[in-house]
Image (tube, rainbow, N blue to C red):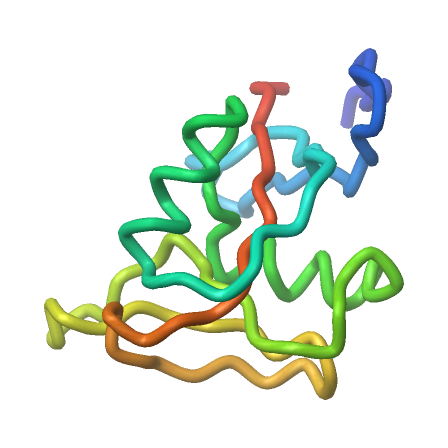
Length: 120
């Protein structure tokens, strides 16, 4: 396996790690962008993340953020970018208090952090 080198970070960014799936469909670095957005709907948080050059993290990335960078988050619920597979009005949320994830209606208000991804 080739060595993975940490990418160059912009001011205020934190390197989270790399995700490489066993089947090779995912291979990217995850970088946490600065800023924590107050409670808002899923659509508003998605737009906010895009406005600062990122995206909401997916469920796997959110679990990794909880495991490695919990101190960068308030002990609160944060939106992920992942939609529920069969409920179109719901998306997944990560609890940065205890690590749980659950599905919630997109109109509800939760916090958000943004990440950017760089291919490996």
